[in-house]
Amino acid sequence: MVKENTDEKAKTANKDGSLLHSGEHLFARALQNEGLDIHVRKADTFRGDGRGFLVIREKIPIEKLFIAERRVNEVIPMDLKTETKTFDDINAAKLKYKDIRFNEERLEDTKQVRVVRIGDFDVSACKNVHVGGTAEITAFAIVSISYLKGETTVEFKAGRDAVFYLISRNDSVVSLGKEYNFIPSEIDKVFKDVSSSSTYWNDSSEVLFIKLIEQAGRDVVYTGRIDLSKFYGVIHDYIKNNPIRCLILLSETQLLAIRGKNNTFILQDIGMQLQDKKIFAGKISDDYLNGKITDYNKIVDILSGLPDKLG
Image (cartoon, helix red, strand yellow):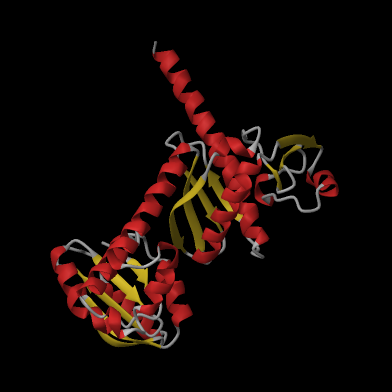
């Protein structure tokens, strides 16, 4: 009985893994089609927990990641068929497929190379199990994005789990649209307009701002053109009510960071590092940073190296 249960779990993990891995191939190709020169360091899709992880050596803009997600979901219903072929080495494979993707570090010149082709969309050197046709994937959804030491890690789902996640994500935006009277597909425009339109400076804008912080998924939040000074009060109240959290907010012109009394993250180290590089000027303490920035991109590079959760 134990063996049967083990075999069943293995079959499920293998099936989920094939959905995730084929989706990962489409996603990586979609990123390349956006003009990005990406190098996949690791793809972990056969974990057995219904989640996939992709580690890319480069820092990929978040908007490009979601453009690629949308493109994958456009390709999936085309039911592109998967074909495999084995070559004596990578050079032979490159002669056949000029645009083949492969990780040089995982290949050995003396071994044969198995190539997986998904319709006319992607061709890649790969040893893993794949779906027979892309329609089996059903859907692909990005669950989280993190940046560490210049690399991009994307967590994603495929199959029914991805469908449910996309529905939930859409419902959240629709709910915000109903509550604050805007068209859900224009949420990015609404968020940008918050900083330039006085009609938004009321209690509801503060609630929306905190909701966006809570749904960011990490403690470093990039807020675009928003004037953070307009939210000092609500941010202080939020941290007071969430004393285990440390929050770093970065706009195009300002950095604001507040640490709850029960959080152990040392903000002063970050402040001193930014100040030494002459890209931040302001107040620095163990639990508070506030000041103007002089080089947004350099600060983003440094903050991207921090863990998702501080403390």
